Length: 526
Image (cartoon, rainbow, N blue to C red; front, side, top):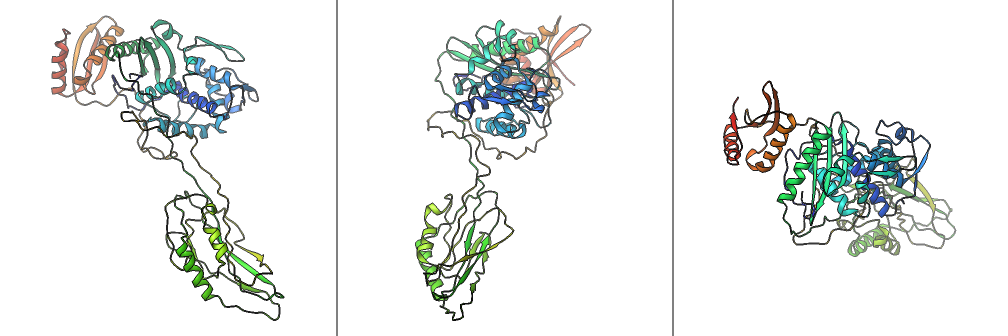
């Protein structure tokens, strides 16, 4: 990818879901940098090492349970040494637990436009349901450079002081061997193979690329060299820089509200009254619509309520209880009552400040006040008693609105990007955080075949020589080769470089184009 514009230069199996291994730590560090910039934590904030974090397998910094260590050292250990224990401490320290942090990682991935990524942990150790793609990791690598340039230099360090030890870079071999390379991250597990997301700058050009599923460090690095070289060759010298827009999150709130309605019969000064409150409690997952009480509805409700209320004097001083019989309006959660109301109190309850949030308006009928989807915490006692004011002789309505209690909100807030006519906007129409993808995770290192035909480029003395030719040819003829797979066959005569999984027509077209480049090519059939 041309990092300046985000323009893709070359891709093969770029959306195949694979284990990212320690490339996962790029997102862990992205969230750490984000938390620092938001003021949630500081570089010198000390994080507590849990027993879970201390028990992570190598690569490790060697943290002990109960130890406290500054965030700056955890970042260095995770970025340079790829320490699994350090990454886990970062996740737990920022979110409270690793599962919560993994959910934040996935949410951020969606906001960055990483559509085929799902995280289960902070360090990338093999776990079911933890996957990403070469395209998504390239997007993330570009975002690290543009979104946090003040921290990006950590990825080019050959060594770093991690507090309890000096750590060496897992990527120093590639950094030292490729001109212009300045990051970013390596990864390896048995299930993932040898992975690398790299960035390099030459002149005015910057290229970001990802290799997943390499068979060795040397194979992975050689493939990356081919990708970056091809990128520098194809990227224009001058291009309009399009910086990625800030990540945009869809805020979601769960709001608890209580609306209580009561009526009280008027009384004489010597009598006592009890008001019975009938509460409407119903938890909802999301309060996105709030009914608006309009002046017309208020007037109508007051008129009907006053007409229905008849003063009842009590000479014996007995307690008079008026029971408000709530009826729910189907589908709205509205409480309808025939209680007499006090205009001032009702008008005050209808003002905007009496409602936790605004949503789509829903005008009530003349005899009802609709409270949209009330959702307080469940209560055992659903009625309460209040003594009516002694000085009033008019009926009253008591409306209590609970303070909104957000239970689930956007984890990161960023301003919406300014509109630009030709901007590349990275966003997502994926399901909201917490929904699991239905697709089965792909953990193999090869895509599906498209046919039983292929082409062979000849025999070579070494596997590496055959692999380099296949990669070079794939970069040159990506259009004609389509989704063909490159494969090196170890035969008695040598290593045969093949492209397989093609239809007969595709194989013939690709072979003709390859032969036009003065490269030996022969179609092979089933």
